[in-house]
Image (cartoon, rainbow over all chains, first blue to last red; front, top):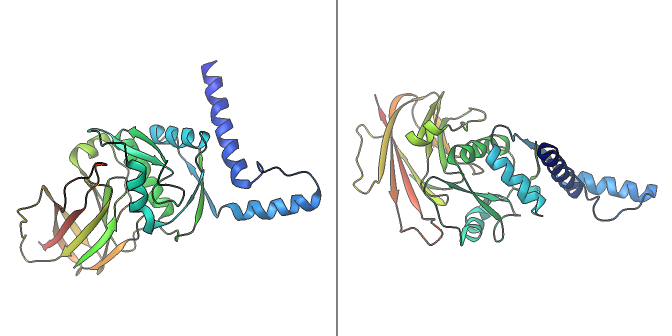
Length: 152
Length: 131
C-alpha cells in the first residue's frame, strides 16, 4: 500500500512538472486554434529536458521531487552570474552542519533560485555526485538556457 | 595569475582541455579523502560554496603558503597546453601549462571569516611543479 502511494506521489509530481512546463495548467479549452497557440507556448517553455536519476542520487532526487511538488519551479533558467547572490539569499537561516551538504532547489545557478528556495541537509556523497551529474549535463549550456528537470 | 570562479556542490575540478563530461562521481571514501583522481581530471572538495579565487602557476619548486589551511598534492599529466578549472554550473577557466608530468599542489587559503550563512571567500592556489 505504501509502495503504491509513493508511486502515485511520484507520478503526480512528474505529471505536475511536465504540465506546468507545458503551460497546460493555465486553463486552455479544446478549440483547435487555441490548441495551436498552446503548442507554441509549450514549445517555448523550455529548451531541454534532463531526466535526473533518482536511483543514483536518492536523497537529492527526493529533495528535487518534493520541492517541485511543493510548488518550486521544475525549470532552471541558467544564470551563472547571479549564483553567488542567490546562494547568499537561499542559505540565510540554514547554518552549515558538519557531515551534511545543504542542497538547494531551485539551484543557485538558476534564475528561479535564491530567496525562498527549498533547502535540505543531504549526505555529501549523494549531493556532490548529483552535482557532478548536473555539471556534466549542463556544462555547455549558455546562460538563458531553460532546462526542465524530471526526476525518475 | 588569479581568476574568479563560483563554487557549487562543494567541488572544484582541474582537467585537461578537451575532456568531455569532466565531473566525477563521489563515494563516501572520496568524501573522506577530499579528492578524486581520474583520467586527466582531479576533483577536490571546496570548503565554501561561494565566490573564490583561483591562482595557477608552474614554479620549479613548491612554494608553501603559511596561510593555507589544507594542502594536498597529486600527480597530474598535462596533455595539451591548456588546463581547465571549473565547478558545477560555472564558466570554466582556462590556463596555459606546458605539456608534461607534474605534481599538482593545491593550497586552500581562506580570505575572510565565514558569514552567518557559513559562506566565505577562499583562494585556491594550484602549483604545477614539473617532475
